[in-house]
Length: 286
Image (cartoon, rainbow, N blue to C red):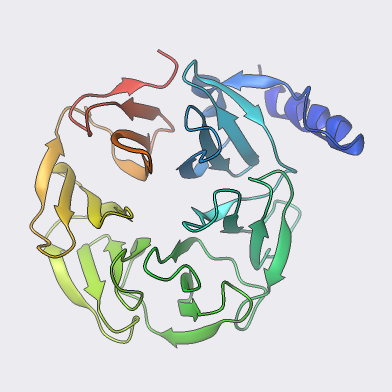
């Protein structure tokens, strides 16, 4: 299977040259982690039985059987995030192996084709962390040296200010477009003024992911504590699961139609699924 991604890429190029991605080879999720890095997850809002997996070598769509099909031209999908107001719109950034940053890119056809919307401020940027506000989907934040913000759905960007040190992840509030959360090697911080100032919410341990769902639930993975959740109003985190072995979670996606269906990706490239709100987990496809 050493040439697996090469076969996938060749198949996709052949398929897209005729205007269709149909016929591209499929790979199991367990094999996928051997050949690329996962940069983001999202439940396919056109077919909630499918999971979108953004990687260093393209965007894949996987089913409950764990088979993943390459659906996009090969890109490096950093900062991958869905537009909460449009089920067919996805956002990303990155830096392909061939060189050159992608800037802020978007797809209007559920990930099949992508175009640069803006180079970003002082760009082209490579947003390793990016988030869009459910409170106002016109507002996006991206990390490129400093914190950048767009208030017109990514068309124009401006630099806000400094980011918390050793940033790992960003998540925008579902209640207030000026509130954002930052997961760092030192804990979890929140800004209530669009990134101008930050205050600590969780201290003393690395927080490897933060995600906010449309209902105002904040999820975080605290190393040593596991996956935790809180309502935004309280920010009083309670554990969901400590049964994740020695995995450190890096990405999380909750089904917008069923908050008990949660998917996560670990630092080892494993993709796990839960149907009970994060209490119990199984590897996707097993």
